[in-house]
Picture (tube, rainbow, N blue to C red):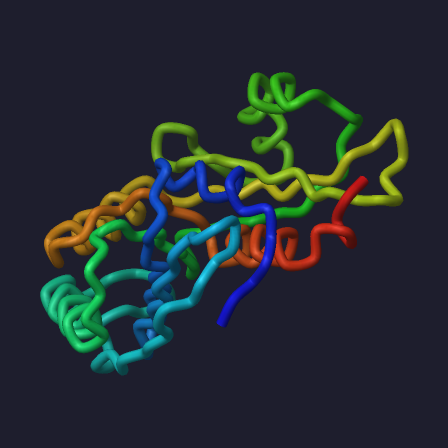
Length: 196
């Protein structure tokens, strides 16, 4: 399967990797997509899933790290995946997301004011949460307003996911929420619909 896009900017966030695994850890299944960038296009090399025993992951919280680690190793081995670089998708009760409309700001201004903006919409404690945002591109955006999605994830949740993936012999290079990963994918596959 091939998706033709100008892929370089999106791929840069994965530390220049040209070969990566997308890993979605759900409550019942572990989902894996192996991607390779060739000549500006993503090639899906494999798609696979494996069931997880009940209670391994509950609402995004890893309750049995050893079982999850073994499942990741089994899935990667069964698919004969050779890359170690992984992009993770987080979901569940430890992840909060809120779409907001704010006065138009530059990227630098959003970065500088992110904790203040986030605290107005999401009950976050900066020392316990990792806060990020994604600007929602829009052709119909008013000049005075912009929309963005603010996401916050528990730092201990991110740390645990990274620890389990590393214990499985892989290297996490990107951690996103499922919603922001889908938004990114949509903007890649349908760039004209999201362009200003």
